[in-house]
Image: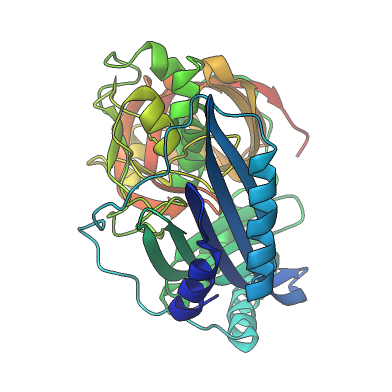
Length: 446
C-alpha cells in the first residue's frame, strides 16, 4: 500500500500539460495463507502497484484518447507512462462521443473515514488456521480454506482539480470442512482481522459437513428453497454485471433498459448501491475520483436506476453516480456494492415455513447462459439439505440450477432480517431468501 504523500507526489509528476490528463494509482498489499488437508501449504505476501493514465487531446472531429497502465511507480516510470499515453493519443482515431473528464465533486457524506489499515502478520494468520484445524479435528474432519489480509490505497487526480486519496483494509476467509462423502462451508469478510471468530466459522462448517453425511439423491425439478445469504449473494451479484450498468442500458441489452419504471421482481425486493452501509468496505470515490452516490436499482420490485461514470453520464445526460472502473474499461460503469433490503423473518421461522423443500448453503461455478434474459446456471455445494415439515432431514446430493434472476425474485416468500457481507470481488450485503418454484435442471453423483 502506498501512503498519501507518496501517492500525491507521483500523481503530481504525471499531471503534465495537455488538454486533459487523468492518472490513478491503486496499490494492494495482500498476505495469503492457504490450507488443505488440515495443514498450511501456502503462505505468501504480494504487493500489486497499478498505475493507469488517460491523455485526451482536442481534435477537429472529436477527442484523441491515449490510455495505458504500468506497474513502475518510480518517478521515471510515471513519466515514461505519460509519454507513451501521449504518443498513443496523438496517433489515435478521434472519439466523437467523449466529452470530458469529470470535475471535482463534493466529498461523500454519511460514513466515517476508514481507520488506519491493519497490519496482520503471517503468524497471526497461522494462529487462526490452528484454531480452525483444532475445531475440525474435534469432529474428525479435514479442513481447507484461505485467509486473505489486504491493505490497499487509491489515488486519482486530473488537471481539472480532482485529487482524491483513500486507504482501507479487510480480511477475507473461507472454511470448508470435509468428511468422507460430505462437506460444509462458512466464510466471513470484515475490515478488522480481530473481529472474525474463526472457531465459530469452523464450527458452522463442521456442523454442515456432519449433517450432510451420506447424502441422498433428489430428482431435478421445481422446489421451495431456503437460500442462505452466501447463496443469495452468488446469483443476485450477476445483476450488477448484466443489468445495473449504464453501458448495457445505453446499448439496450439489459432487461431494465426496456422496463425502467415497471415491476421487475416481487414487491418485497429492494436492491441499492450504498457506500454508507455499515457493512460495506469500499472507497468513497470511484476510479475517476468522483464521489460515490447512493443508487436505487430496484425499489419494491420496480426498476428505478443504474450507475454512471463520466462518459455515460455525458452520453445519456444523467448525473454521474461515481461508479467508474479504471479506464479504459470495456465494461463501462459498475456497481461497487449491492445491498438487498432485509425482511422481518428469522432464519428459523423461514425454515419452519417449508413443508417439503431444500436448504442451500451456497452456489458455485455460476455462469451466464443468456445475458439478455438474466438466465444463469450453477451448482449447489458444501451443505445441501432436504427439509420436511420445517426440519432438516438429511443431506442431499448436489443439484444444478438454471434460473431467470428476475423471475426467481418474483417468487420470494420471505426475507430474513439477518444480513451477511459476501463476495470476494463484488461485495453484496444479502439476507436469506425463501423462494418457491426454484428450478433445478440436473443432478450430480456427489
